[in-house]
Image (cartoon, rainbow, N blue to C red; front, side, top):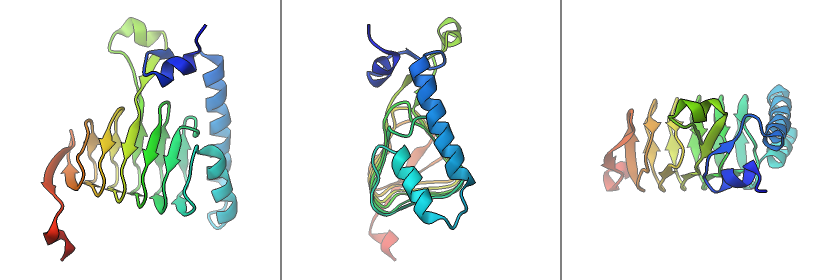
Length: 191
């Protein structure tokens, strides 16, 4: 019999609320997040060690301000020079991959999980999870919400308060709810 975790990895509806394996993994992750969030801000070595234990992959150089929250941790990959400011939330039922030189402002959320519109399915605790990918050299403004299945291309700027519901092509400035491209980044931006 296939596990709920296997269904999740295929992007199918799965039982996230009542499956003992997934509930246990989330609890273990939350314990590590709790420990991380209680560390002294100056205890950089221990902070780095805990993030490396939580995440599936990290670069050598990263900083994640406290508090930070995630669901599983092992589905998160960050590249070099990653920075996340306070109150970053990553619900990583599916993979969440960040490239190099990604800067995330305060109060941002990356949510791979979604729920059925049908109330009977939703009330059974079923959900789905679609991956999120953020390219290299991306700046994400404060209070941005990135939804399931979104890819943000390289060299993008996502304006504060945006709700990113669809893919954003590389070299774009995108803002709003729903987030949309307002212009391309080009030579004039080097001045």
